[in-house]
Length: 301
Image (cartoon, rainbow, N blue to C red; front, top):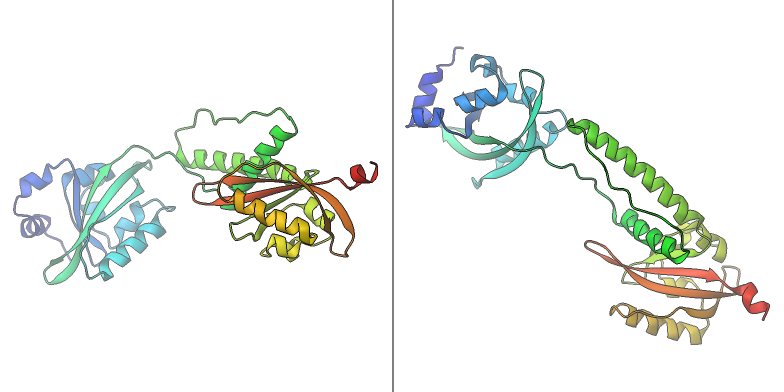
């Protein structure tokens, strides 16, 4: 079936010349096909209007990494009953094989008694790639920075240098760099001579290192999710002091380390020195407990 481009243009838009020369790319998708695209859209893609007549052609010009997200947005757009404007960013593939970033605004409307999507696009600068870091990983990085300072280990934070233009290469390089840094910090976290335990504000253990397992003879799986003051056994007098410490700690007060006795899984008594601080994250605050085994020091006195 031959599509009459000019007739569609006339039916959809009353000011055809104005739309054709708009600085915004303007188009219409209906039944999976691009039934209208102004000159600006065609210039963005590098295709002619005849080139884009193939059904679902729009799926071929969306970058493969962005296509699943764009498909979900379009599918949702066709189902929604309230015709709000949807806004998102994605990459498009040009006829030349190059890619560029665009920002898309889309809205439903009816054309010939069937639903269609009106979209406008504008070219935007290439966004700076972001790396998502989990709460646990971010907490570990904060903990290790404090440990390095505590043990007076010289270190410096390396900033990423110049990026190459190609976005995929930048993402790959940053992913490799973060993985390498994560492995190094994990190594420091796990091999620290001190027990390191991270608690949420309910006092539950959300992470601990291997030294914690060796010190108390519990497996990590036994500790994660348990309340620290309930699972790690302390004498009654020390327990009341620690409860008071954590109450002050959650108010943001800085506290001195505490020396106390506690018991391992099999009931063996050990002496420990507890340092308690807050680890402040983007959307969460964790309690960091660093425990040093001072049993030998106490026995030698």
